[in-house]
Length: 352
Image 1: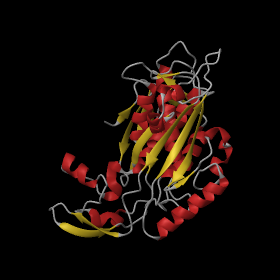
Image 2 (image 1 turned 135 degrees about the vertical axis):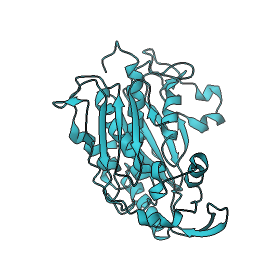
Image 3 (image 1 turned 90 degrees about the vertical axis):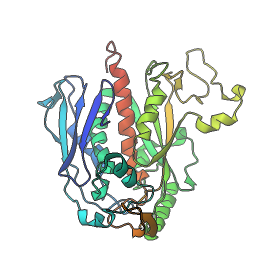
Image 4 (image 1 turned 180 degrees about the vertical axis):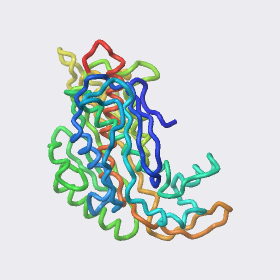
């Protein structure tokens, strides 16, 4: 399935080492004046080569819009766009033409389709997520007053312990790891550099906070708001877990501890529900956390199997992220925006 969304919908194409990646955005209302600099800014946050703790592949990631926009405004018709691939080094992947990287999609793609583009992982590459950022950047411009702030909340066993209410989100972009606490950010950067020098990778988590979400987004049974957010986040490469509100910690609590008691205006004293009750937004902050595994390609020798079923030794080559979470922050924000824009599109009486 290469399409995400019901009304506000994105269909994508392209591979990591093909000519280009791109997509078609459908369901975008007409007459929206787009801020193209802001769209490019979001892409720049995701692009490779932006700091010493991410992959050094050099891509400008300049998006080119082909349709659906006239004189700077959306026309209501499909928005087509492409992002050219400029810096492929396919020879870096010659060693995995027949071998499968452990914990990577190499093996499952080969078994499912009988063929795979081994150059950079083909369609399984996180390069695909640049398409999502374009659609998410436009979705953000549809949502007006809703604030979407994601940040790195852990790297390995280093955690940002402060509650999100105590953080200054304006500091998220002040450092290369995108953690809004300068002291913790410095520790995270040091850890990632150490891991990179050892030829290894490490995982982490991203927390996302959605403010000013109107009451009533989400459906009560199979299209719950948190279910759609979970589907979106679990679609991101390397994601292993999603929790919102109290998450797994809520399983340790009693109802008398976990219940969010009401104020007279309908707000709640606590917010362990994470802004969603019965699958529907309740007007409180929505917050969730996304867990990312360590990147599968490591610069250390490991045993694996090849297409003949033989045990062989292999070692990663080329340019890879030692930790994916810094570049995944805008991806998390983009998908959250797309989910919210999709649900708002189901309420035609509301002004988006």
